[in-house]
Image 1 (tube, rainbow, N blue to C red):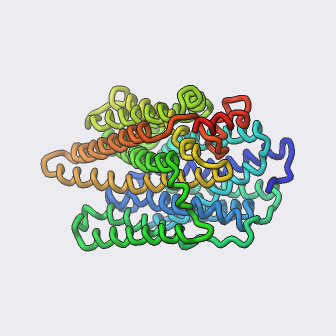
Image 2: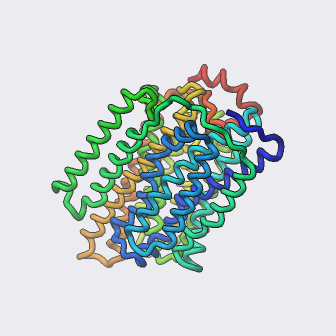
Image 3: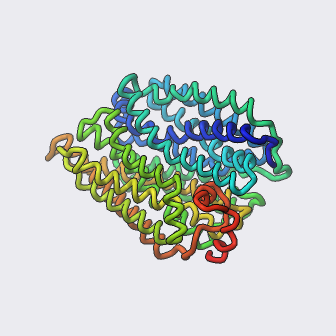
Length: 497
C-alpha cells in the first residue's frame, strides 16, 4: 500500500522517519561511554553491567520481525507512532532510574519500542518511494543515518555525561520523540493494515526471546554461580528447550515469524552465521574498549567519544557509496572476507594495548582497522543475506539477518564480558587493579578477534560468488544507489547468484 504523498512532502516525511530511526540508532552506542558512570552511581558489578546493554539488545532483536508483522496487520503509521511513544516513555524511565532493576527494565522496554520503530520505518519508506531511482536515494539517506548515528552517539554520550550526568543520555530522547510524533501526524496519512486473516506469531517471538534471555543470564552469572552449577546448567537447558519450541512453532505455523525455508538457502544461512560471529566481536569491542579507555587509561567520557570518532567516521564514509563500489567491483565474497579479517587485526591490536598506553600508538591503529574492516564488510554481509531470496521476501530476509546480528551481539557480549571478568578476578591477587582489568580486557579482545576471523573465513569459503542479489531490501537499495539504475542491474545480479 503506497502513500498519497508527492514532491517535497515525501522527502520531508523521509527526514522525519530518519530522525526517529536516528534516535534508535543513537541508543545503541550512546550508553557505552556512560557505563562506568552508571556502574558507580547504581552499584553495578562488572558482569551485571552487561545487562544495561543486553536488556535493550535482546528485546530489540527478539521483536524486530514481530514489529514488522504488527505493522502489516494494523497499519505502519499506527505502529510507528506506538513505537515512538513506547521508546520515548521508556527513555524517561531510564533517565529517572534510581535502581538497577528499574534501569534494566526500562532498557528492555526501550528495546521493544526501538524494534517496532526500526521495522516499520523501512516499510513506510518503501511505500513512500516506489520509483527505483528515488527509492535508491532514500535508502542511501537511511543507510547513512544508520552508519553515522554511531559517531553521533559516542560523541553525544561523552558530552552529556561529562557536562551533566548519565541520566541525560536518555532524557535527550524526550524532545526528539515528541517532535517526531507530532511531525509524523502532520506528514504521514493514516493507512489501514493489509494482512487481514493472517495470524500473528506471538508464540514464536516470545519463545525465541525468552530462550536467548535465559541463555545470556546463565552465561553472565556463570562466574558467580559456577559454570557446572545446577543454576547455570538448568538455565541453559531451559533456554535450549525453548529454542526447540520456537523451531517447532515456526515449522508448523501458517504465517511464521521466521520461515525456516529461508535458512536452507546457502547465502542466507551463511550470512546469518557470519552475522552472529561478527556481531559477537563488534558489540564486545564497543562495550569493552569503552571500559578500557575509562578504567585503565583514565579517559573522561567526552574523550572516549572522540576516541571512537575515527572508526565511526570511516564506517559512515563507506556507507555513502564506497562499500557499494567495492561490492560491484569484487562481488560479495572477497570484500566480506577481507573486511572481517582486517577488523580481526584491529581487535588483535587492542588485545596487546598496555596499561600505560596512549592514544596514537595503542588505540588509534586498532580503531582505524576496525572502522575500515567493518565499513567494507557491513554491506556485503547484508546483501549476501538477500542474494538468494526472491525480491518479494527481501524485507523479511533483511529482518532475519538484523535479528541474528542483534542476538549474536547479546550472546557474544555476555560470553566475552564473563571471560574478561574471570581473568581479571584471577589476576587481582598478583597485579594492580588496572593491570588486572587490562588483562581481562585482553582476553575479551583476543576472543573477539578469533570470532571476527572465523566469520571472515566462513564467509570467504561458504558464500557463493556473485554480486548483490536482486532483493531490493534496505541495504540492497542503499548499495545500489551508486549505480544509475538499481532496477537495471537486477537481472544480471540474479543470474550471478
